[in-house]
Length: 272
Image (tube, rainbow, N blue to C red):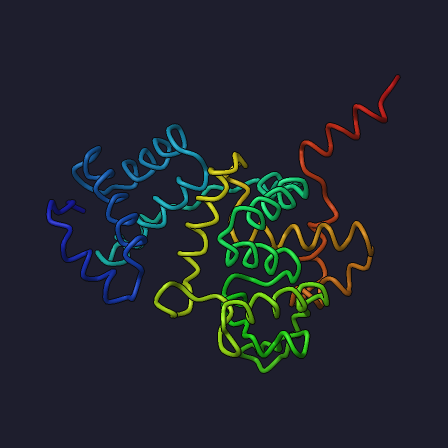
């Protein structure tokens, strides 16, 4: 199979399949990389490409590029050359989760220095276990009830609780800024924030306050909620319900410990 030098038709193919701009850029980059190494697609060259990726990239990037290459083969009608992904070793620890110390530090700094809006973004994420998509659906009205009900496509209801202290302080905050109703977290134009915008700002504050940016992202606070919950109330089944997990095994990851925690335990316990 000859490799065409013009990939614009492949780009159109990806656009027709409603892939995001970032995904299209990634997949196009994968095929262009292949084209810089080989002039045609054969079983041997495809295997060499996989070996090249494994040698030069991290496993997650390898799989991303393989996925892009395989999409190209589907487009070209040559699925027989498709490559298997590499197996990602699942870590038994949670290193990319914000520590409780850094979570509290971030809250203190935002409370003191502002913007107050972002103090409440962080607090809501850490105290409710909400996903960022769920966070952006919180309204002033939910502060009165102390919870927000979310419904899945299958009609299952999940109730996200808001702690009393958070409800009280957030209500006072809404009163100060003259927001009697509507969405809690909006941008300067009064429109609901986007998940991408929330992630970007959290990274900004992480760098500002010298917290590892790799641990500061919306889902990290959901993890922190789960870990803190189990440390104070060790009920895995209840936590699974609170997080909206269908299988308690999904929740079991929060019983593991980070590398730093493991090291501290070993240093303390192993004295022989």
